[in-house]
Image 1 (tube, rainbow, N blue to C red):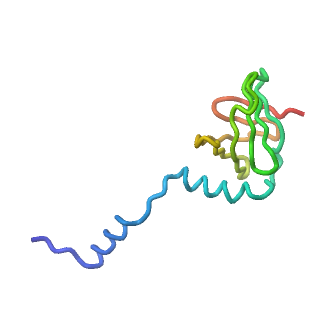
Image 2 (image 1 turned 90 degrees about the horizontal axis):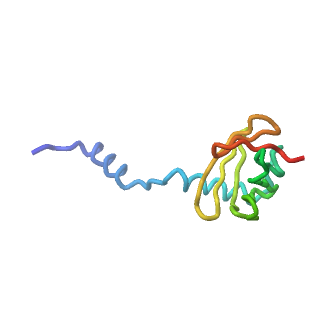
Length: 117
């Protein structure tokens, strides 16, 4: 019969019973806290694809509103900007991210957005 060391057994039990949080839950908690205040970054405003089909507005309150073609407010949710990185949490549960490659160019979801001035 194998004997387990009590400390090792306690560690195994503690690890087995520790809560496991999916990354999107942790990201959502971070976004919930950040979106309660005004965002402090230079990217607030309207972002559009070159053909104008997708319009993505980053609001100063940490929310975004995305239009697709004739469909206004096709997607809405929260966002957090950290440096030049943006994380999105759509109200339906969809998550996404992107990178601001300059003050006027955003790469997101395989698309390139340009700041509308």
